[in-house]
Image 1 (cartoon, helix red, strand yellow):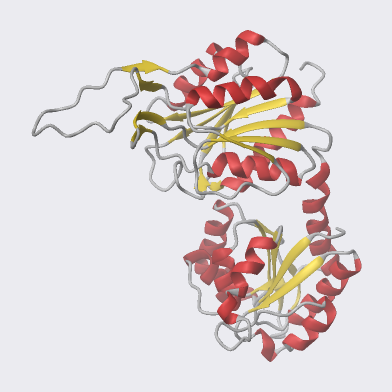
Image 2 (spheres, one colour; image 1 turned 45 degrees about the vertical axis):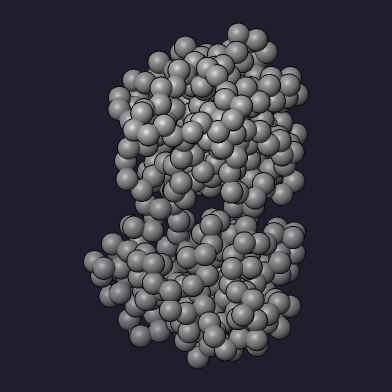
Length: 401
């Protein structure tokens, strides 16, 4: 875990003293750890203890900190690979599940876009309460990982489930997260992302609502896990992930040219871009003026089918396509899989609320060339990116490929 960037979130419970040991062990293994505390965690262990062990400032108040004006929780959230909440109390689980942000830790959680590991600790009655169980189920459905508490003697004097998992168990879970980070070492990825803009005149264009978040997440995770990544992106507001070879473009033709140019030097092509299917037959040199109540008729022609051209070149690359559909999701994805000779296709229903275009989460179906269908639950796009990369890695290791 040398140089791993971790945020350790500490909420208010008697198990806070174990968080001190977790921090000590993480620092010993070379991790760069930033500690964030809930409003009352300092009643058990002072921020100074965590600051001394981590060597970093501790974020523990929203308004009294010297750095609050610098939005320090946003800076911490942007720079970390993993957020570990240990211990996580029943109260903190409720805040995380329902988007409440009234202290430093719950505030940072809402700003954090990376992977989250939660180690709960509480009274056995709280652990079994329907509200707590529902909150845990909700967080798991969003892709958060848990290290369940142990059965044993609790601070309240009873024996039962609720004691924070042993520090060695939590540490091993953290290690496993970072151990996979170099599993794509030496592999070359070509990823497309975002929409395309097909100009009508100097001020107008045809496009779609794609934000590029899925493709950027794939590129970022592939790079984080040791891969060499080229990211070809249509116009987005996103910052390119650090360390990738970024190639911007606007039109479908420009994206196609870049893909064909870079294809030879990659092992895997992941076409997550929402490429426009049509462009205006004629590009007007001047802005089209409105003529009273007269309508405007545009003649559209098909853009080049990038994946079809890749299939025709037959270069032996592993090729992954995406299918954004509004109906007949699996049937349409299977048709595209066969027509374009794909190894995998990732399909999602863009008509479903809260997922797909513009969102931070998605719910997708992954289908391979043997027509094996895997329905993934709603997860952050970064988690979906990791799961997709896991499937790709499995295929690359297959002797049949």
